[in-house]
Image (cartoon, rainbow, N blue to C red; front, side, top):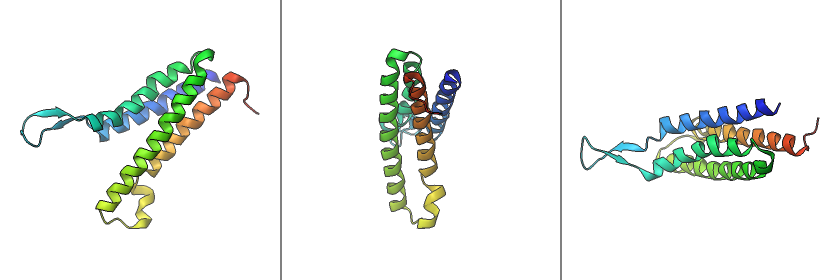
Length: 135
């Protein structure tokens, strides 16, 4: 069960990383110098959190003595990610005139739901490690 949860935690973080990398390219064309590519720190940070989740959090859950840190870091990433993605959606919808009914599918709400699934996989893994997993 532990190996399955570790694999699920890694794979959902990998999916988040690939999704963010596809959407938030951090090497972007320079608007002032056509043909040049510049580094975008903001876009890089959007890709960095899933990368940390994929490698650091999963690695912390491998050992019993560091599982608590993995659980805490996973929770922090979920909280920050939820706030940042919700803020991004609200800002995008305030710029564009999108009906309220379309917010469900055209917002980052599905992405936030996947992020919370990542948290609950980490919680199940932590509960399994600490012996608190209830049947």
